[in-house]
Length: 138
Image 1 (cartoon, rainbow, N blue to C red):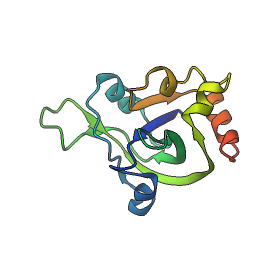
Image 2 (cartoon, helix red, strand yellow):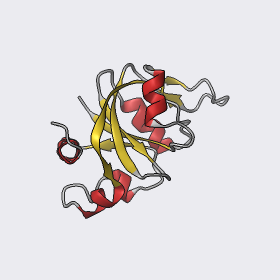
Image 3 (cartoon, rainbow, N blue to C red):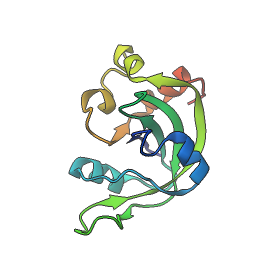
């Protein structure tokens, strides 16, 4: 299993909206090649943090990738892809960007170093640490 981080602006599509929607297409439209490559690398059963960007700037929940990537139906060029996700659980204590930056294990996460990247890999050690900080077992 691989781990990821998916960013979404909560005013466009929030964790609560994802939970209400349930399983379905991830709502963020990716138009960046590195993010697209990360989506293409996802496999069914992988896990991802749901991160509120712009407002909040915190990891708020965990989703499961429910299938391989497929062409984004909103992309007329056929260049970009999307994935389906389902919400698994919220973090009892959201983990803020400030916390990520201050933590020795997390300060080099892609979400910290590549702030504009909307889909990024997360190492197993980072996953476990964020889960612990968020009140979950990794």
